[in-house]
Image (cartoon, rainbow, N blue to C red; front, side, top):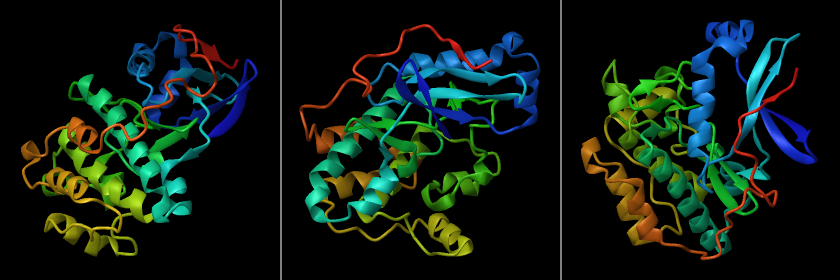
Length: 274
């Protein structure tokens, strides 16, 4: 991730890893419909104030680097949680969780599965929580072609739903997103990953046996009940992202709806770089 300046404002540039698919795109970027389809999909779901807005794409011919350009964040939720573990931050904690849930709900309404929900993938922009780094991992059941999407066996397993381990051909779903969201709530309250310090083998054992993290201090009964719902053995029993939104409610009615720069980027997708 790099920081750059575009029209006098800070933007973030995320360069894609050099997979075979990325090399194919960089060889002829203007003639690769899948790449631009990915961009247009991200752009189309960026209309929520709780999804990180795509500004454009970056292509550098000499280095064959290609990537996505988005608004710049002040922090991510993981880092914020590590530095704000005191109970005096609980109201703000709930506000950020509601914002993240609204972003996830927006993705799910558009039939997009995030696939890698965790606090580090929730960015904070002008006091607003925004979902990011989904890379269009799945849309209408179709996995992403590009390297921003995570393979299941490479996912950090602290947030992984049991069904993704039990079945060899398991696919990430809205339900597995909700399971991960509940794990992320633990992370936001403790400032650390769920089951922190556990060996991978022990961690997988906890997941497969449906053992869940200890309830952190500060989590109310209503929120904990939704978390347990999101951890249901049957993915069909987990409900929707709207459940946690209704449970917590709008903690701060003054939710910021701009992207932090005072105005939204133009609707057109445009290239940045050479």
